[in-house]
Image (cartoon, rainbow, N blue to C red):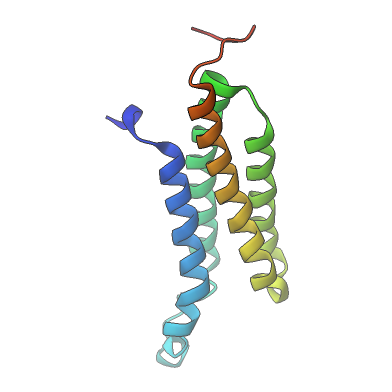
Length: 130
């Protein structure tokens, strides 16, 4: 069932959901700490979202690389995006300045992978396993 999914679309959706969460949640729930509820800047939740995004993206990009286009460009773009996402957790004062470029690189990597897969459809190389 999961083999027929468009993993690039799932990756783009997860990246967009993460960006929306990070951008809009503080606006809507800024009063929650007054109630003793700490959902903003929850390290475990943020790390979980980054790991989920990484898992989906890595699977999608590996599949596209191995079975279709053999291009490192989407992998490099995705790696930059994930590195920026992880650096957000270290540099809290630069949170919003790192968030949007990180989401941008991850989304562009998935779009590039999707377009490359559609353009090449199937490319055999020396390391092709089928």
